[in-house]
Image (cartoon, rainbow, N blue to C red; front, side, top):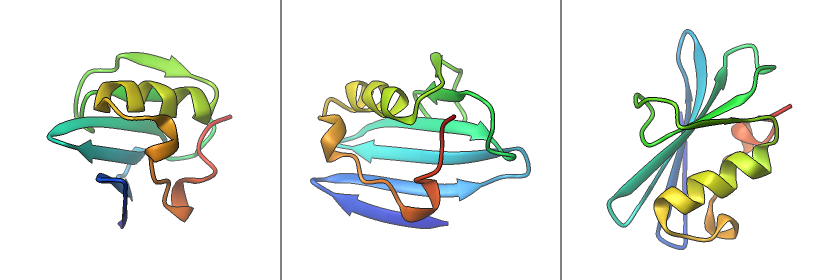
Amino acid sequence: MTESTEQDVTAEYYETDEERILAYEANGATAAVAQNIEGYAMLKVRPTAEGDELERYYGFDMALDHAAELLGVSAHDLPVPDAAEDMGM
């Protein structure tokens, strides 16, 4: 697990048996970006790491934009741990 914080936004990257998860928390709001463990499928944006999928994206930037919207912050304020930088197609 890797964690980083910037501009009051905390990012936590971890892997399960099935997915790569980038979970965010800011001011009590949460959002998550998930991808299959192999790292080649579309990204799923969820309100939480375990929540229902809201939307799918090919691009990491678009998924981060949606996650930032859920958090009520700018996408530029979202930290991305090194291990998560290669998410997306």
